[in-house]
Every structure is written in C-alpha cells, then in structure tokens.
Amino acid sequence: MAKQRTSYVCQECGYRSPSWAGKCPECGSWGSLVEEVITPTLKNVRSGWVKPSTSEPLPLERIGEKRAERVKTGLKEFDRVLGGGIVKGSVSLISGEPGIGKSTFLLQVSEIFSKIGNVLYVTAEESPEQIALRARRLGIKSKNLFVLAENNLQEIEKQVERIKPELIVFDSIQTLYLPYIESAAGSVSQVRESAAFITNLCKGKGITAFIVGHVTKEGNIAGPKVLEHIVDAVFQFEGDRGYNHRVFRSLKNRFGSTGEIAVFEMTEKGLVEVPNPSEFFLSERPVGKAGSVIFAGIEGSRPILLEVQALVTRAVFTTPQRRAKGIDSNRLSIIVAVIEKELGYPLRNFDVFVNVVGGVKVNEPAVDLPVATAIISSYLDKPVKENLALFGEVGLTGEVRRVRLEELRQREAEKNGFEVLESIRTISELPEKALI
Image 1 (cartoon, rainbow, N blue to C red):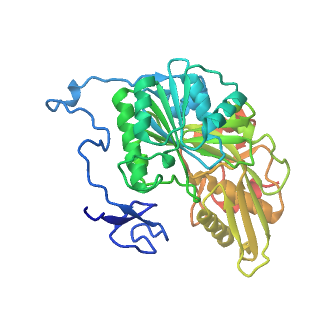
Image 2 (tube, rainbow, N blue to C red):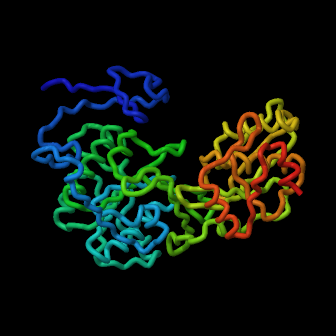
Image 3 (cartoon, rainbow, N blue to C red):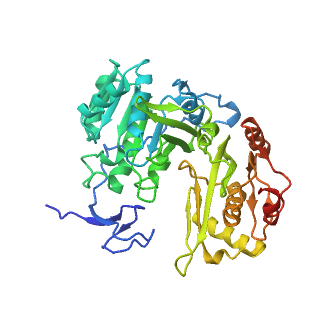
C-alpha cells in the first residue's frame, strides 16, 4: 500500500505548505495550517460547472440577448436587492453572524418558492425536528417543502434526483463534505470542492440554490476566497443581535448592482421588511442633545438617513482612546487629527467614541462630515441645529469635498423633514453654521 501524501493547508487563505509552520507565509494568520491528505485527481469527479462549448467562436453581434428568468418573492425589499427577483438556476451565498436570522429568513423564502414547486431544505447543523419547530412558529405549513438532514453531498444529490426541487437551501457549506476528499468538513479543500459540486449540480439542472456561510470573528466569510468567486451572488446579514432589525446587504451580484441593502425587522413571525428605513432608524433619535448628527448616506442606489453619535470625555489614561462602531477606526483617528489641527481643540487629552446608531456599517467617505460635526458638538457641549442633515468627505487640510449622488441625498432628507447645509466648505465653519 502506497504511503499517503500530506500537505499543510491554511484554513484562512488556502495556501499549501509541505511542512507545518506557526504562521502562514501568505496571509500572516497564526495557527491556521492544518494537515490534509493529498487526494489524487479522479476522472469521474467533477470539479466545477463548465459551460458547453460552442462549435465555433461567434461574433458578439450575432449572439442573441437572453434575459434570465426571475421569480418574484413578494418581499419588495428583498427583490430589489436581488436585482428584481431570484434568477432561476442561480447559486447565492448568504452569510452572517450566528443567530442573526439566516435560517429563519431562508425558511420564509422556501415557503414562497414552494408555491411554484418542490423545495429541498438541507440541514447539516440542525435536526428536522428543530426546523419543523421553527416552521410552526413562523406559520409555515407547505406540503412542497421537504427537509433533509444530511451532510454528504453525494447522498444529497440522490435526493435531488428523486424530489426534483425548484429551490435547494444548503445550511451550511462549512458542514457539508464530499467523501472522496480526505479532510474534515469545513476545511479549505472541502469548502472549495463542495461549492463547485453544488454549482455544477444546480446549474446543470436549472435549480436555484441558497448556500449559508459562516463568518469569522472579524466578520469575513469563512473559508477560501474562491468560494465567493464560484457563486453568482454574495449577500450578508448585518446588525447587532441586541436590535430587532437586520440589514441585508449585497456584496456581489452578477444579476444586479452591488452595495444594495434591505432592512428587515425581526418579529415572532420572522423577518418583516421595513419600507422606510430612514424613519425606522431615526424613530428614537434624541432631540437637542450634544453629539448627535443626522447623516444622509447612500447604500448602493438607495438613500438612507442614519444617526451618528459621538462622545468626547477627558482621558483617564496617558494614551487617549479612539473607539468607533459602524465606521473605520482609522478614519476616525484622521478626522480627530484634522479637527485638532484646524480648530485647535486639544483632543489629545480626550477620549473619543463614535457610533452609527442601529449597528449599521458605513464604508463611504461621505460620513466624514457628520462624524466631525458630532465630535465638535460633544466637545463644545452644544447640540446640532434641529432638522439638519449632513454629508461630505473631509480632506487632510480640513476642506469639505463633494460626494456622489448629492441630489438623491438631499431629496431623502427633505422627504423626512430635514434640510441639508450646502454652504460648509471647511470644518472650521462647523461651530458657527451647524451648532446652536
């Protein structure tokens, strides 16, 4: 019997090494190299979906346009993020922190799909009894919804041949495995090959699939990056479990625009869409309090109003703290430095804390001006003018730069009873023009 060959594979980036090392030389993560058996390539094992080749190359002008068939779910916010509905035969990855509502939401989507055909819900983490208990709580009683407790993909394929579903939900990709790959479920090899197997299976039969993916402690999708490349769309649930709302964000979408968001509220009957997120997020806004500012932001193509809060207190330790939730902490440090340089405030002696209320993560530079205004307001203990919304990028010299879709932001602010201050050109004007 031939000796088995092994290699050490990084569980973060997929880097292979012939020997073990404490630190991955590719991504720099510690303790991530795990020994795996090198499996010979099998001719009868498919490694991914390959489109049938044409007999000859065709000019682009001769290729007819074929629009992908979409299925409306009835959840307008969800359909908008998807780009108009679920594309038949597409494979989508949905990730999020534990307990945020991924399985609950997909069970609701499964019920909608069961009205047009069979749906197979593959649970590799929970028992069928647990799924049934959740379904009863949500009021789901569909006869076309089948639950399969299995994590062997080859066995799952047999049930797919028998049931012929319109939709398959795989919960989750980190617990599925292929028996001919000699590594544990959740390893880089298993996740990569399992995703390719699912894509091959679903695209070959025209079945729509949703794959649940775990996240790391940093909030990134667990597994190799190739997982996100294989699937057609990547969506992520965001939000703090201490809040009742969830933000559904599009990170990649071959059938629509990326960056789109939908807001849902977690109730006893599952996730319910919020048609006006701006009103929802500002419903508990404190009026007349220092350190609170309204930010007119853009998520994808949707304008949304969010509350940005800042707290400036005298530092207890020698090194002042700079803590941010919802924005990049490095960006916060830059804004604090610009305020100190341009306005002369001794923030080096103060701790600065910034929070985007509601657990929403903001990545666009337009949040700079609201953050700077909130910090100045808290430091001077002067509230921002009532019904004032702000947006703008702050440069290193203190200038306020223009950002994209300004008219759309302004219309959203006016629709909710706010006005946008357009005359601010530098942050040195903020104390006079923005504060009471």
